[in-house]
Length: 239
Image (cartoon, rainbow, N blue to C red; front, side, top):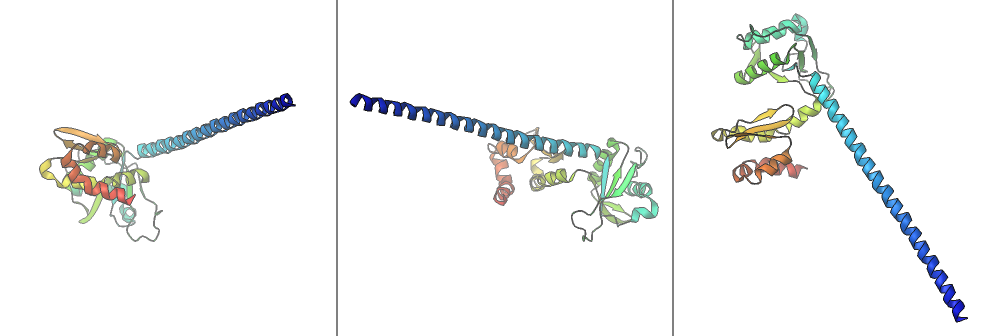
């Protein structure tokens, strides 16, 4: 009887151990599947982000020869035509450029009021030029002149980017402003195509694609850290 009891316990133990082994295998399979699903989701999210970035790059590429005219009264271009209007802007503000660039306009249109249809300010006028080089020369001259007008009224000329890129560039604004105000330090800050910021530091041009890279850089530069801590810390609190 004792032997039979021992055999029963032995069989029960083996059966229990077998059940545990099967359960562990099942758990291991589920963990592997969960890991694969997680990896698949991460890959999917990465693919979506890459596709969005590619579309954004494509949109910005198509806009590279575009100029954005801000502050013009609505429908003023319909009275004289976009090309005549643009020639008027160039003649009034950059007479020296008029002989050197092709003022021919390939296309001109107003931006849609998709953000706030009730907005009372005029929509931006987009002007497509034949050459990117001409657009860049005009923008350079506009930066140097600072005050741009049309028929005496102030307007603003800017590059034309996708909405996402414009938003990303605006995020550098506070840092750009701080660096620009420190004229004695000679930082010469710039927003580089598309959304990088660059400035001069200790005789070298430093370029940063995002704010984390900038934070890493200034961590060992006390002067920069003190200058920019206000804008970088307030941004972190906002998040």
